[in-house]
Image (cartoon, rainbow, N blue to C red; front, side):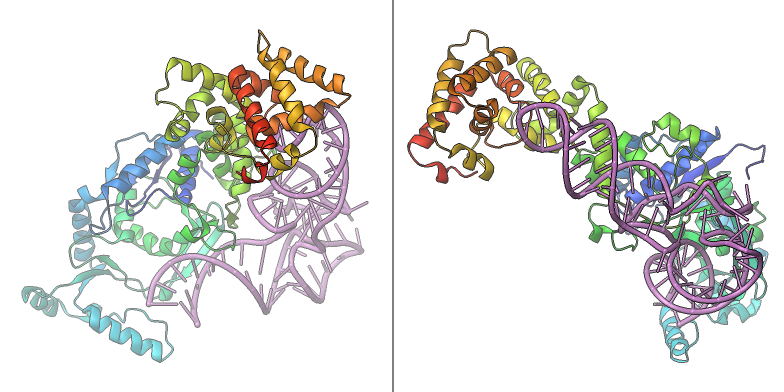
Length: 490
RNA sequence: GGCCCCGUCGUCUAGCCCGGUUCAGGACGCCGGCCUCUCAAGCCGGAGGUCGCGGGUUCAAAUCCCGCCGGGGCCA
């Protein structure tokens, strides 16, 4: 329980060795929610000590992704690569206290002994050879210029116990832990070491991270104790899983947040969806605003079992948020997608914008993502290339050519090409011919849009305008009369 | 292989701590109906879980205890 009077401080600590993963985004979200809920601070630390794999573009992606989600951090970003002195100083302290020691074993030697242990069926751990070196021997080897790493001198007996906010008590026997490396031969700290030093130095009170870090926790706890730091509380979030229940990765589909952004997922939908992966509101109401999420979030209510990332549900939720959008706002969001098709400019001209404002409400309730707008709005911007299967079969019925021809004439004669006038004309024609309105509407839709599903016919025709509607109807008539419908496949 | 975590409808989950009020509730998806010019949206309804398995405790267990199995993670 959080009874401490000190301020809550949490952090997200991604390494810029890849694009922002949705799992990292979820971890960031939970940290952020926890911080906001408790009036604490949410911090960002970039773990860029891996010189080889860290890339500025990944760092950019991470920063932009977090901003996009609205997960704002409260203090300047901390870069591990800029605090090497700090790690060196703390490592030196451990060395002087005898809680760390230099190890001169070469990778080859280590590998050889590991194989030997494996062959004997023993769990392969460092055999602590260099821990038994005398001070004199160590100094001699260092003076010889032999490369070495620094290892933590793990207690040989006893156990570490910690209380995980989500899982309760977790314990590890010290004998299972080995003398792990804290400083590599190039002088860079290892993950576990830098993480502990930083979390302490940054005043982190709660470490909220993925379940895959549980086995790092006992090592880190030993570091806290050895360095004389007060350990934070831990909460290990359930992993995000793919459909086969293994850790979510590229082979399961899109995993970087950016892919979802490009797809046209709204940040509020992503936040809402991610919040529900492992946590559930007490009132069982799933659609929540950011403010509600903050108010209702409870770390201790997080479920410990892994959660499959269900794209279908995300799409549903995104559709929900899209439908909530004011039309002009949605229209604005769709601009880049249409511009990419070459349909409009970005920013759009005045005419393009007013047309877009008429198109948008007609596709709004059918969209699940912004990118789907392209498919849904295509016939508003381009003459249908042909007709899909259903449309062709509807057009091929007897009398359709004559019917559409007559309709096109009557529509052409309209002074005011409005929803009401068009509807009136269509129904009138149907009535005169003793047809049901649908029998005129369906082929008309096929001729005008090339398909059988879409927005209300009369509304869509008004937006399209007289000229285009009449033109498309007559084109269909020509195709039907020339008997080339079969070739007009989409 | 060692250690650790997890196990309620296909999926996200409520309920489990404080055993009975639950012939296990909600959401996504699926199926059907209504609406309707189609699709969608919306509304209404339905199918779907022997609560991983086995034993025990108890008048009573998804809920407590023990064992097992399965899945996953980390280290290798």
